[in-house]
Every structure is written in C-alpha cells, then in structure tokens.
Image 1 (spheres, rainbow, N blue to C red):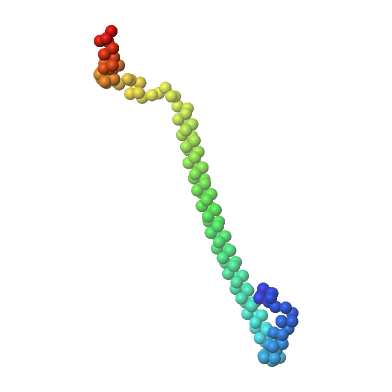
Image 2 (image 1 turned 90 degrees about the vertical axis):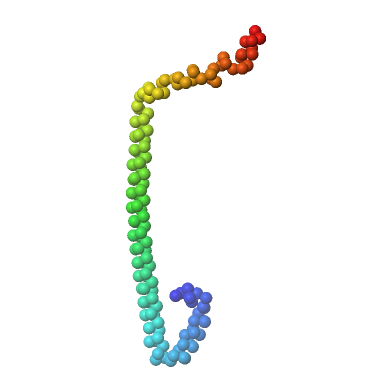
Amino acid sequence: MLAFFSGIGTVELLVILGVALIVLGPDKLPGIAKSLGKGLRDLRRASDDIKRTVYTEVGDVHESIQEARKAALGEVKELADGLVEEEDDAESSPKDELPAAQDQEPESASDSPDDSPNDSPVDSDKKDEG
C-alpha cells in the first residue's frame, strides 16, 4: 500500500485528507477509515494465505520430483554397476576359447581357380616366353 503513495508528497496527502473530511464529514470519516483499514488487512491475510498454499504445494511437488530423481539415479547406478561387472567378467574369461569354426580354414579357398596366383593370365604369358 505504501507503494501506491510513493509518488505522493506530504502536502498532497494532507490535501486529500482535507477534501475527504469535507466531503464525508467528521462523523463518517473515522468509520470509513476503519472499514478501509479492515478491508486492506483482510486482503493482505488472504494474499498471505494464498502465498502459503502455493509455496506448500510447490514444495510438495519439489519433494516429489527430488524423490523421483533419486530413484532414477539409483536405478541408473545399478544398471551401470551391472554393466561394469559384465565387462569385468568378459575380460577375465579365457580368450583361447574360440569356436571351432574360426580355427579351421575354409576348404573352398584352395579349390577355387580364381584365387590361385599361378593361374593368372599375366603369369602364364611370362612362362611361355621363358
């Protein structure tokens, strides 16, 4: 309320009170000032209650968000720990245990005439010359 009167000086305030006294009269002015003060006080209480309610609700939501965040971080940590354990297990297993198919050479490579270096046309021309 003081912000409303921040642009009004002392002289202007006295003039406003004088005009109110003349218009309303000395009998009604104290009653009106009292009811105006009571109305402003009730308005302030109501706004304080609304602020308190909003802050309480926002605080509850904030707590819920923090709890969900902690739970999510815990799950992510568990998953990361599980991956690290799996990686450690994979590194500690013997590496010489390869499948049998990888140890054998394919038989079709020696039978194929396209892969043989002796059958190339360039090599056969050199053999004919020499």
